[in-house]
Length: 203
Image (tube, rainbow, N blue to C red; front, side, top):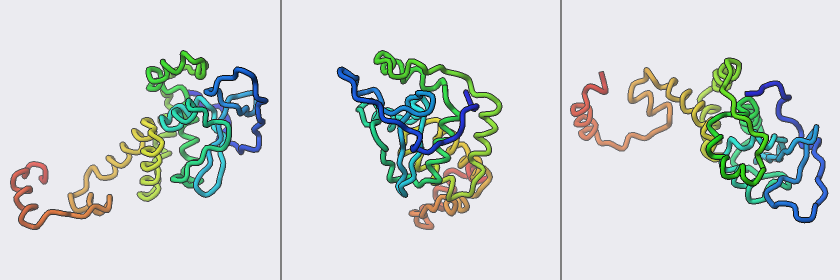
């Protein structure tokens, strides 16, 4: 997966493509530096990020919007703050060419939108980036988990869910509840019965 490109860039570098007769509604009308096809994502706090079209394909939410012709202006993502969106965009850039999307893009590929998509296996550098990416506090990790869910981005969800699982691996039931902010809705009697029934799980 390529990691040699520059990071998220300002949308001020964009130029508007002139409207062309017979142009497919699926073709994003924005060009970035070097003539790359890009979209612009706008966070809930009004920050804008230029994202390579191929990077955006890692989100099913963004992919559907692009296929519906919504890539001709800043795409609002009100559920995400600028700092969170910046991290997500960087992860997408690092994961460019993720082979998990090859099958999903097959049908769309017939339209010629993503003909430059080239699946690649993750490198050691990308795996190292992933580890650093989730080396954040609990609240920041939860923000990224919510972003992964909202964007329907399996790669981002995998990375963040693995981190959450690692965080609670050796915790007690009570500690897990506190970590995730869960309310115990069992009565003391019900919980005692469950602990007895599944005693092996509490050893």
